[in-house]
Length: 239
Image (cartoon, rainbow, N blue to C red; front, side):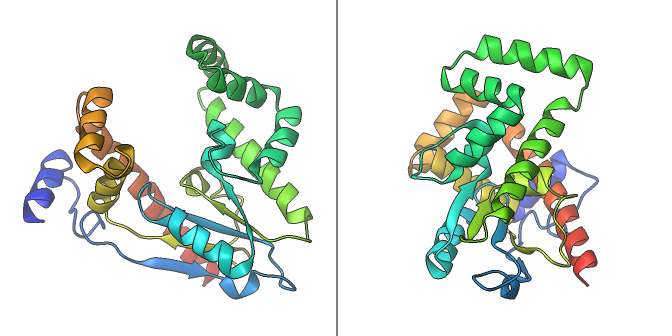
């Protein structure tokens, strides 16, 4: 642990890893869970946290407990429909409302990365924050659709919740679970998952793709800072 902390401190000397939750962070913040359920005010529960924090595992446990349908921000944004999911029908409606969203999904699924990049770069040239705005619009639109379906319960899980829905979610009324996990543990789980359960295979894959693991550490670190800001905002508004 001391070696890992020294490594992170060497990269980010302005931070203190242990204090920032990079080494130890097991807190799980639950807000308004009593307001989620049938005959309750909320029919949607948000579950978020770092990649590898265990949010998907907890989501499926909660879905069985509440009889809720599961939606994933990965599925919505990347079109990765790997599960038997209810995301598809909401995505189809969003694609009709946002043509660029439909185009990005089509390019991803067809692996037409050149066309994907051309469209992305053209939109970002007009507005550097265009992609963030698009994902925010798509996710808020789908959340509104979900809220209108009072006959079913839904759990929306993903890291993109604290990235793109931070101004949409109201912790005074909405139900959510924010999973805490150290960056070190999250990276370890991320690598293991990348290798389909084999940590060394996952590490080799990441080294081939990224060339430098500092990129992965930096990515998780920045997400952790954003998650902590989101958590503080939700706690403050809730209190």
